[in-house]
Length: 316
Ligand code: G3H
Ligand code: 13P
Ligand code: ZN
Image (cartoon, rainbow, N blue to C red; front, side, top):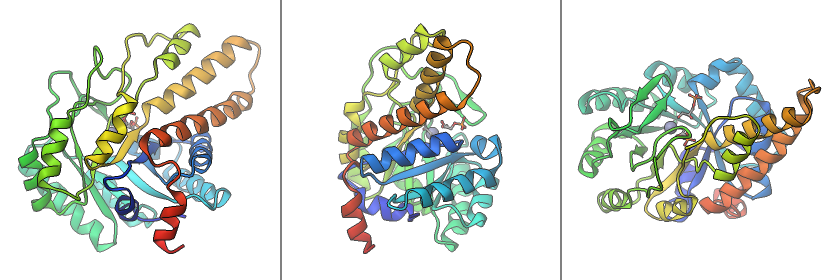
């Protein structure tokens, strides 16, 4: 059942974080839905502009609709990840999305406000909520690369002003994470001080953490042992998800970790079976492994086991 992102946030705020997982194809969709049901967790499906262009946006929408029929007990929202203005309007008009993200965080504050306000107006007219971003994460967002050292943390006073001026429904804050598999040079904690200050000003307002993959080191080791070269990658400490959720981080974005599961499964499969050329056996393994990964993440986010209570609170 597709619900609004606002409904998910209302149930989760201050208690747990809803996992927001990016998908591009049918195998990811099957693994995601299976893992969510196995862990009895609500979730958000994220679709990036790149994902919409990978096969065809209609194909992706059809896959999600079908997954919703195959797993009728699932409760989820559909969200545009890192949208530009035009993509936001396309998704708002599609009638399929629960929420969109307008990412104008690379623009100066005033321009970010201006663009976000326009999107909020159009989205709210159709009952769709809007995530905006303030501050700048390192790494790659769609086609924009932010070099290490050029990222900047969200300023709490600016965040309050930004939300007041734009009317956005949730805010992606830069609290030390970045996109991709190479987040930090060494172990690094989230900036809980920034979260505390934002919460003190905007208690009850849902925050979003991008770049939240944990880049499991055993996964990386297996990938490298099977021919990969992604040494030195590092991610977010999974034990910090729940403390962040208690400070208002209501949506936690995870994409890279799923790609690592895919890479490990396929590298190991074809290393061990060099004469194989049927893609379905490793595809099947990936679905199972991705489902296990999703369920394990939902436990760490605190969203596991929330499905029945959410259903009751929605009156379904
Ligand atoms: O933040 C970016 C997400 O991981 C989506 O990545 O634009 O390559 O689909 P993508
Ligand atoms: P990761 O690269 O850490 O998975 O972040 C994903 C993300 O923020 C999607 O918007
Ligand atoms: Zn992101």
